Length: 229
Picture (tube, rainbow, N blue to C red):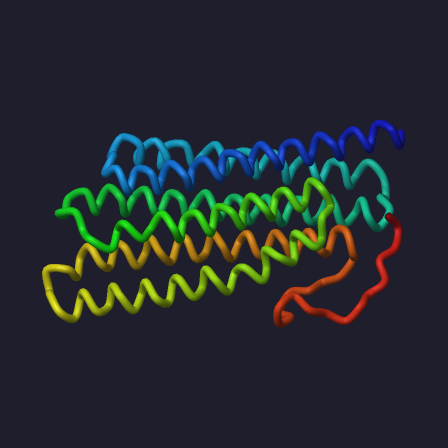
């Protein structure tokens, strides 16, 4: 029974990694579609969003089934429940990728806009955070997870600067309002992707340390004993 249950946990983690791969690819393609002004690529992201949704639903159902198999020890219980939460964050990442793709299609109706060249940097930061968060989950690397949380401030700073720049463009030329509004939404989507990466990292800390560090500044928290690993 233990061996069977352990194998189920491995399969659950593998499903989560598959979902993470789809989410990361969706964000990358959406940003690439935006930069290259490729409507077909953007529509591919939109049309494939159901894949991520379907994996989340299947993963949740599987996790609940595993919980019903037996009363898991504390570590296994945290692993299963946090896997469900991480899958929800990944589903939201997929939604943000869809938002970027839809805005890319709308932007393609407008002339090319200068600030667009700065989008890849923000996207790279958010995707690096997401990859590191998932890697920390796989490796059980709490230090790496905490580093992702700290990095979220950098993305927030980029978003604030970008928002300020785009507001400046809108105030000085009414013709810039429509493209700038689309770009603000895109930047906010990237900022939210970074937030989801930070959420995943907090969930990783909870899995491996048994500490809930949500709503704590800089990821700091009072020690809470972890049991059952």
